[in-house]
Image (tube, rainbow, N blue to C red):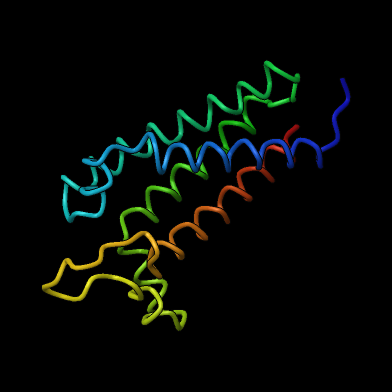
Length: 153
């Protein structure tokens, strides 16, 4: 079956986006979520486990597309796309690269918007500037991963 690169891109991006939502919000454990930004090895290990399950979720949804509708997913392109997504996800979720980037691109106040006040855990929320920047960075690299898949198909 001949499938256009645009169709591969659209289907791959949709699958990766759904996988991202599942892996970041349902599959990630509380322990991973609470520890992945910690300094040193405890944070690195928690983040690595999260990214391993995240990448596996992405691979499962891409494989489902391939099996269900025959979407062409060449091994090299799929591996490269998943690698880009996984490595960048790990870096973003360690938090310090995200905060560093925000502070050096004019978003140093936005990245802290909505966070609980120091010394007061009075209103923890997903509706923070850090969460918005985290998710938008992940979406960017999901797009890059889908482009890689489409270019190799």
